[in-house]
Amino acid sequence: MNKNNEGYVGRPHGKRLGRELAMSFLFSCEMQSETPRAELFESFLETALTEYQDVDDKTMNRAREYASKLYVSVALNRQELDDLLAPMCVNWDWMRLSAVDRNIMRVAVTEMLYFEEVPPVVSIDEAVEIARDFSGCEGGNFINGVLNALKNKLIKSGKCSRS
Image 1: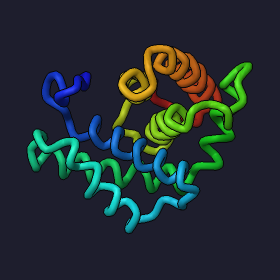
Image 2: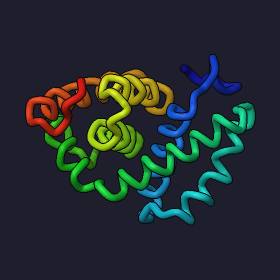
Image 3: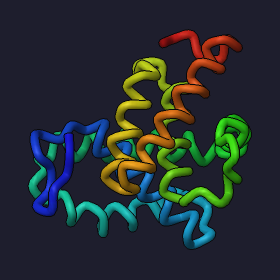
């Protein structure tokens, strides 16, 4: 599912939109040095949803619900996520990566660790596609490498039993 200047090519699904909304909200909070919280999320959604006027209400409600679960889980586990991700960014300083890329990876790892219904390969594929839309092809390739390496490490350590 790719976006063009007029919106999505193909039919967007709730989880994909939810991932994008969660990442965008977390990025916004990080840029403003804000702690993610419900009232900020609602305010963010009011503005962000104007970009998705062509999405039906059912899909948008699913996206909103999924984004809420994701951002809360990322916010509650951010230090653990960063501690897992930073060592996987070989030859890169975690905090020097773009905030977009960091938040895309946080969302994907949150799904790998805490959302059992989502296979890790789906989380990775979605993260790569979102990165290509928001960060460019190189960002997508970098994120793919980092997340696949982390997925393998998590499976070996037993923290993630799904492949």
